Length: 377
Image (cartoon, rainbow, N blue to C red; front, top):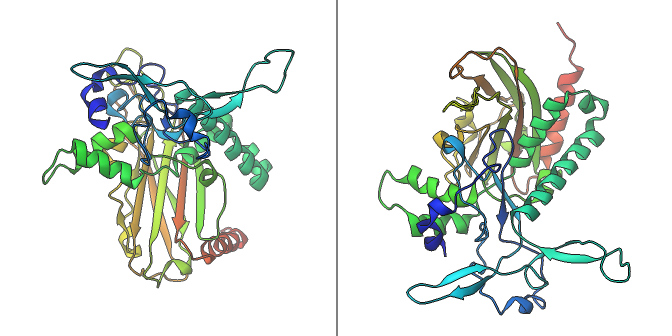
């Protein structure tokens, strides 16, 4: 199935409005919550990806405009089954209808005798996009509960671009799906890593997300956020405190950062995106015994849209001092085409994680509280 989709790539490309530059494009993850006992209702059709966590077959493939990463993220669009509609020299298939055996349960219009709590089943990218919208609302509500008026005082663009960053932030390539695409589509050989990742991102974008990961807190990880606006040729440093518990342990740990912004557009021009921002690789990140994670789009591929995300990981012990901090630089690149005088809003999300070490969140929170108590000047 993956080979067949790759062969008709030109017919499976994203179309407007999914090529949005400032918005997020949601792909349908081949996932639902159908119990095994009810899966039998779908057995008349073929499950093309049994056990493989990837985009469902009908989800359009990237990349997006100007070779940007699209779709941005995958959210559940049901475990789509296929029905055979023709055969001969080749087999022709089409998506089967969503149902109890393979679908997402949704509210439906009233049916028969005024039944008002009717339900039906659906699938595809529309269902996935609805889940993305709901997750965005949950992120907003969580920020409002935690920060109250401080968050609500932010401008609408600032809140929107922060939610955009936080929604993409937990996205990761499913390991088995990425390895399968790499094995089947290659290309094989040394020096082909970038082209391999290009094929993977066509199917997975930045990766699949679990909505709960975009909202929930956990003791073994801490997520920071920042918003701002940059003028032409400006840059800003965001300082992230590193907890002591992050050091001295030879176990998996990671740092992930996601930058999102809203660009003015230049209609009718090839360089439709008027403003580019970049998140510079922190020079001292190696001190934390992490390197760029291999299971993600490379830097050139993430620098073509309005989302830039990177993850660094490792499993060797890092040396962390009591007041250690990591500085992340957000930089506005020179404008392409006519100069753009307006400020460009951005949102940044950064997560420190060390699975199983419950002190991470608490130590980061204490460091931030101590910083707020320091007198100015």
